[in-house]
Image (tube, rainbow, N blue to C red):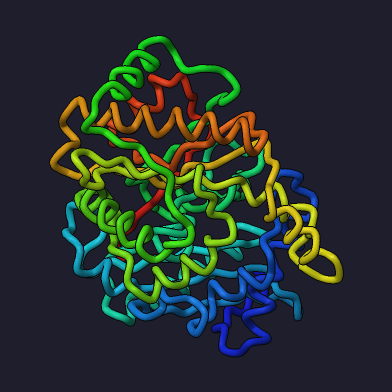
Length: 383
């Protein structure tokens, strides 16, 4: 049997080794997007990630014959522990993620160690992969390996699914992304709904104002928390997280790609669209030096992309069962479609992730003739 040593990540050097491993494991995978190492390091550094303000975390490295051959993160989101159990998390639920391994036996050794840590912390159930917050990269890619992920979405080796299921984890939720050709107009029924909304004086669809970033973010967050509060896996964003997300996303926030819908002057819906930063960072191979920073800054001035991604949209709860909800959604989607093509050169959009049981959002995605292009799966097991 292989001599596999599992040890905790304790130092800055360990963290750097932790983030370096995927660069070797995916070196020959054309669809893996190397993250900027500075960003990947920030994700697992408590002082640089506001999520740590309500989390307990322990990462582990697997070593064999002096080589690092695997990694995993075990973590507990203390806010997730307070959520209703019927929404996926709740009391006693720990998580693991950021899992990478050369072989199945290495993965199993890492998983046993992560589960043991969670058990020692009083957890009775494990959910994974969640890397690391539900707002970051939840789920394991199980379909859609043949093209790169967009910004803030994950990639994985095909064999990981079998390894997780061999460890007696069962699927509990699927997260889907949809892709749509934005160079063509949407079906006539959608166009009719949009034109009807444009005739309604109660409805205003406006751009965000980046010069009022904090005010606009507060409006969007208020709608998000109301719209998503009953969804599976929902955990409210905290002020430290909001601050960090703002710093990370502000450079790729463009006024015409984020819309807020108002009804009778009340903000009721929003849609966030981001140019696919992965297209710009993939050639940088994880480093901004020596010239990567200049290339990225030039790209950020006025990005031209093939793909834009819609990571978040929402409608306030009291409108969700009404015809108005879909009308607002279609209007925002259409206006952003036009802007993404005219101003950013986009050819396709990726929408999601969308929960497999979110029939409202899935219906909207299907009505604009988009199709599922990637599926991510979340697993659980009793400890």
